[in-house]
Length: 83
Image (cartoon, rainbow, N blue to C red; front, side):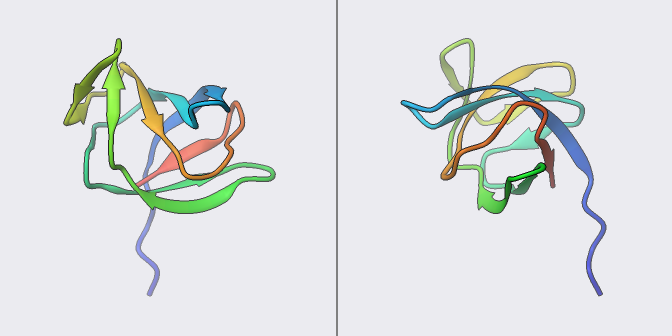
């Protein structure tokens, strides 16, 4: 049985040189969470290893915040992040 994935945010920007996605959160997310990033040509899972809010490392992001999330593959604007 596949567990239901919950949308936690949406990619609003991607910085290819540093492999960081800016994600606007709709639900809380923590370092250590496993997330799925999915879009028209994006589909991969990864563990959240580091995230930042305004260039400061944080352990948790809350709904309504935008976080910088290091990603292991290219993502695109409007890709959705699930947990």
